[in-house]
Image (cartoon, rainbow, N blue to C red):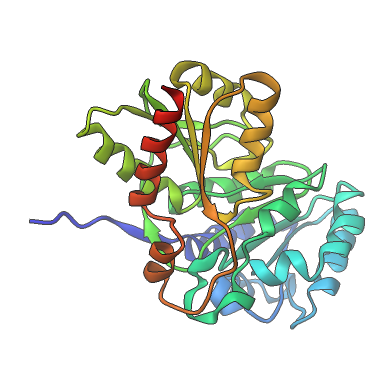
Length: 315
C-alpha cells in the first residue's frame, strides 16, 4: 500500500499565520496588490479592515507606502505574487526599503515555475537573484508549511527588511512541531559522507527523496535545508564540503544568482569543491506543475543524477 504524504500550501499557512500575528500585535499592517484571495491576505483584511490596504495593481505604490508605515513605527507586510512583488517595484524596494533598512516584510507567493498554467510571464525565476542582491535584506525560502509559519513569525519579530518566497501548490510537509527555524542557520536533515545536497523551498522534499534512493545504491548523502539564503550559513556549507567533498544544490530558480551561486561563492573563497546544480536554465511555459518540474529537471530523479555525476568528478 502506498503511504500518503501530508501536504500543505505555504501561501495558506502564511495567511493564517499573518492573521494570528495581527491578533497579537496591533502594529502589524498588511498591504496587498489585488491578489489577496490568492495570497490568503484576505483573512487578515476581513478581521482587521482598518489595518488592511489593497493597492490594486500598483506594486510600486505598495512598496513606497510600506516604507512610510515602517518609518511611523508600524510593521508592514506586503504581499502579492513573486513575479509582481520583486521585478516590477524593484526600484522602490531598493531605494525606499533596502537603502533605508526599513522594517518591511515582503511575502510573495506563486514563485517559480509551479505557478503552472499561467505561463512564463507569471513564473518568477529571477526573484532570489534580485532580492539577495540588496545588502540589508533577509531572504527566506521555507521548505514547507510548518517552516513557513515560523519564518513569518521570525520576520515579524526581527527588525529589518525581509523577503519570504512561497509557492502556489500544496507541497509535502517534512517538519513536525519540534522544528525550530533559525535565521541564518542551515538545517541538517540527513547525514552522509559521499556527497551533500543543499536545497531550498519545494526542492528540499525532492532532495530527501533522492537521498533515500541513493542510499539503496550505497551512496550516503548529507542533506541540508538552506531556508535562510540571506544571511547564509557559510559554516554549514564549508563543513559539508570538508566532510563529503562533493556538493549538489537544488532550487526552483534560475541557475544564476540563486542558491547555487551563493553556495559556489562561499566554496570558491573557502573550500573549492566539485559542484553540480539542479536549477532552471531557461524560461518555462504553460503546463501542470508536475509536468513542468519533470521537463525542466527539478525532480528527485534529476537530483540523484546530479549526485552520481558530482561523485564521479570527486573520484
